[in-house]
Amino acid sequence: MTTEVDPRVFALETKAISKSFGAVRAVDDLSISIFSEWITCIVGPNGSGKSTLINLLSGMLPIDEGIVIIDTVGIRVLRAHETPEHGITRTFQEVRLFDQISVWDNIMVGLTERRLFPSLLERTKSRHEAKAEEILRSVGMWEKRDAMAGDLSYGQRKLLEIGRVMALDVKIYLFDEPFAGLFPRMLERVKAILKEMRQQKRTIIFVSHNMDIVRELSDHIFVLDSGALLAVGEVDEVLGRSDVIDAYLGH
Amino acid sequence: MALSSHAISNLVRRTRDFTERPRFAKGNVELWANLLIISWAAAFMLWQGVGFAITVSTVFAIWAILAVSLNLVVGYTGLLSVGHIGFFGIGAYAMAILSSDASYEQLRTEAIPTFGWPFFAALPISVVLAGLVAVVVGVAFNRFRDDIYVLVSFGFAVIAFNLFLNWRPLTRGAFGIHEIARPEIGGWTLSGPFEFLVLALVFLGIVVLISWFIVTSSFGRVLRAIREDEQAIEVFGYQTAHYKLAIWVISAMMAGLAGALFGSWTSFIDPNSFVLLESILLVSIVILGGLATIWGSILGAMAFVMLEEGMRFLPFLPPEFIGQARQVVLGILLVLLMLFRPQGLVGRFRL
Image (cartoon, rainbow over all chains, first blue to last red; front, side):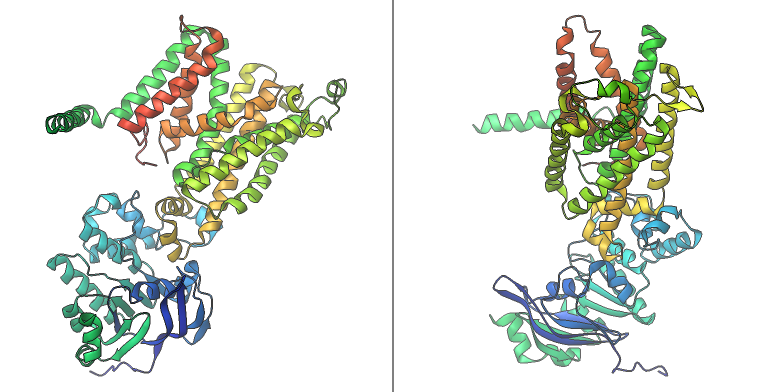
């Protein structure tokens, strides 16, 4: 390999971020650093704060304390509609598509004009169409383009949601359980997509409970427990640690 | 007990079979709805003669402007507003105050400010005024959604009505405002009902064109996405509050236009035309025609006006009950529609 990834480049860092829901500290003083162009996995038992972390990083929940550093820029208040500008997008644990519009339009909203008045004047552009076709073909949904997103099967919905974020040309992708509930064939497809995105030099952060996939895909792993960082490092080493095994199986 | 529950579930299944069976007619409901309503309207007008046709068509044009504009908010953006009649009233009152005949008005018991402007000068002001009020209301409403939205828009309709009724130095309350100006183009007054109908249809055409332009643009696609999942579309970099406010104001301005036309057409308005019930009828028209379809709203308005006028000719119905009867019939229609065709006559979407 001639092009070695420099492991010291951080795409995203959090500095002592916290989030509480009432008395529960879902994310507790958490500082993590995500390497650029790597696939990073976040694991942890249920309720360990994985989804809350994703929600914080995508601006869907306000951060109580701490800051997020994206591309060396410190951000205290991350708003959802500003995340693509910062180079972040996400998928949801429970697939959230635009059900009563077509598969095609689900992709198109990721491509079209964001500003209010220009979007009023914008009609469909051929470069958008070409990109949408490319994405739909790469996730294998081209034949389904005229179907309503709500009429798709679970696996297809999962794929479409991944296709939808591919429409955004950003650096950091957060995938909240992209493999949950998928049949083996679909699973392979999603794995291939993630690997492909890694090749395109995207930074990927994903949450999963499937340890085989975690081992296969991850370059780096964070283990959360009760909102705090339990372990971090190279996959096999971290997953072999006794305290990590305890967190998963112990209690 | 076991037997009866079995029987009931059997019955339910059979009813379901029955509703699903006529597949040959399934795709044609839209076609039949179109044919039925349009031919009904045409036959009715032919039977009743030109004068009736002109009146009914003018009423239709005004309702259609309202329905199409409300559909932008309710159908496309998913904000179920029952306050639309408020903007209709603001347009009508602005037109009335700006254009009513000053000499006539000051003869009456209570003096109100009158300006005696011509119709076409008062019209843009009425539209802009409705828009300005919508900006203020919209900013306040933007944080709400779903059922809460219904409640706050309900509140707006009630407040608007009470202002029309009680702000007497401006609206003369229940006495209403008379002698509202007729449209005039270069000295030629559109005094005849036919000329006014043409004007109303031209404005309907403009509203439909603008709406069509909006819903087929990228902006329109974002509105639909907001309807489906507002949080998710925000993650894609859209500031949904701005989009919701923009469509709300555009829609309110169209309603203001309809109100101004209505005021000029009747030449007299009082608060009774702007009660909450009218707003709910309007929502019914939008749902009847179909959410997120412009043609559906036009068809819905046509069906509604025909239904209303058609009741006058029911031999067993005393004239004083017509108003109530149309509500009953529309209510029953809505319940049937929600049961058997929740997407409306020509729509594809559900609430």
